[in-house]
Amino acid sequence: MFARTKRLTLRPGWPEDAPALAQAIAHESVAAMLVRVPWPYRVADAEAFLALPRGPHDPNFLIETMEDGAPRLVGGIELMRSGDGHELGYWLTPDAWGRGYATEAGGAVLHIARHGLGLRKIVSSHALDNPASGNVLRKLGFREVGRAARHSVARGREMPCALLECALDADDDRPAMRIAA
View (cartoon, rainbow, N blue to C red):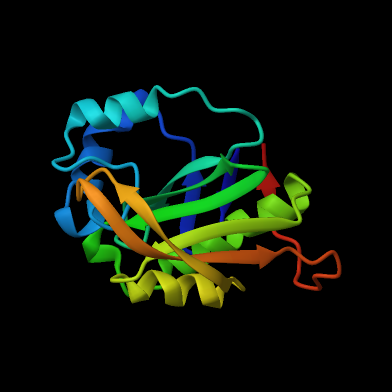
């Protein structure tokens, strides 16, 4: 599955992406805000992640931008099966923060969830010490529904998180975007 937005390409990761993926995510400031990412993050971690099996209803994308003239990996975004539904997770490399990439990529993935997968609700969470992620999720239509501790592999301990939900309304009147599977 692929998606294009005004500034981004969302595409599957391939084995040859491991060095670029490791370079993009291997920042303690990124890993500490995620649940499943180890710290330090090495090329072997990227290789293992890229080798994980993916189902047709579990979109997992690398985020690339062409804004600097050549394709550059700036993050990742995915819908993961979670309990009875799907959870949105994402990250950006630090030099891509503050450019609206997470909101742009998140909007594309929510569109895929609704129109391509027929999902009606998505959940997500963010570390309470990462309010920028909370701002992105609110822009995407998520509403806080609670708080809980989640284990962070990078931190090696529980971290307090906000839990959020987004209803994907059937009467969404936003224009359809082109997606390819």
